[in-house]
Amino acid sequence: MRTSTDPDNLDPHLSAASLTQQIMLNVFEGLVKPAPDGSVTPALAESYTVSEDGLTYRFALRTGARFHNGQPVTAADVQYSFDRLMGKGAPDGKPLTSSLADVERVETPDAATCVITLKQVNASFVNLLSTLAILPAANDGQHDKSPVGTGPYRFVSYEPQQRIVLEKFADYWQDTRDLIDQVEFRIIKDDQTALLQLQSGAIDFTSVSAEQLPALGNAFTVVSHPANSVFIMGMNHARPPFDQVKVRQAINHAIDKDAIIQAVFDGYAVKLGSNMSPVMAKYYQDGLQDRYPYDPDRAKALLAEAGYPNGFTTTLSISSHADFYGRTAQIIADQLAQVGIQAAIETVEWGVWLERIYTNREFDTTLIDFTGKMDPQAVLVRYTSDFRRNFINYKNPEYDQLIEQAVRATNEATQIERYKQAQKVLAEDAVAVFLLDYQFNWAMKPQVQGYTPYPIFFHDLSRLRLNP
Image (cartoon, rainbow, N blue to C red):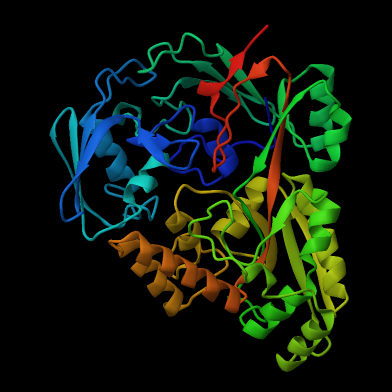
């Protein structure tokens, strides 16, 4: 199978890249795990109960679950994993994720039971656990070098810029007899090279762009589905002039999303107006995609009102790990030039992008596709003022309050309404240019069967079969 870039970190508690998750969710599991329909299903916890007040979760650990080193999974490992994620014992005391901010305490009354008590109701809590890996305490200090999980596949090796190798775990808590014995993810950055390797038989599976589909003919199986992704042009609100809403609105009017969809994605994408894909139909606020129609004259007028009648210069920083970033950046730069904004395109390696832009927030503008999540809270929390990965530096107390009200809601109708209101705020503030949700196209040899799409980045190897 092909992947386009190196993992950002083999330690699942430190990894931020969805392309890493796409592979390593086969190696690691949480108390629950994602299902193809967007729900969660039992994993290392075979069952759980919730107290009447919604604050106490009691998890019964699965009998017979083992780590890849052969050791049984115990409540002590769950305690260790949560303590580590919450920053307990860390030199700086900082948590590794904000997802567990509502956790008051974790208790382990016996080796097979874990009790988690929340400070306040969190309607998204169980969904948040689906991608939080339980790690063995005995492997402390080695998670990034010798990853040990509990999933249906165990980590074998990683050669930077070459490959990641996994093999099925014979002692997995579910039957693995029909699973593929070994899977090698080859790191191939260039899409055309990957296509040629698929056609030559060097690899069995790869993503293909819409324009590459005709080259496949009838020789390969293609699985297509919406990505549940939000592809944005992010603007750093901490840097002028992007701290001005009129400048951000002008940029939104200056960009022709339909042109990008046709030129880059061959029409296989839908236009967005906020940070949610229509794949999440229950929570999606329709109509926002038309909030900023392509209108260069309106863009120029807004720039003049903001004090930039002659435009300005900026830098559009993009990662090199996906071809469509560069193609989209060129179209955006050309369109911005029509309203007086000169955007120099800077291309950097994926690791540099993650460190300099996503972590350190050192950029003017950038392109990124936010990958699908299991829950609307995880999708929209990205823009709350205190979110650790709010890398565009957006701050709005009204938005923060709506997200807080949504996650504390005790009935679904209120939760849905607050999430829809939050999307409207993002659109009104022109927080980013919410471009589109594209379609995934996975091409594979006919022998590869059972590929199952998820609403998150995940190649579920446990569902694949390799037939003669």
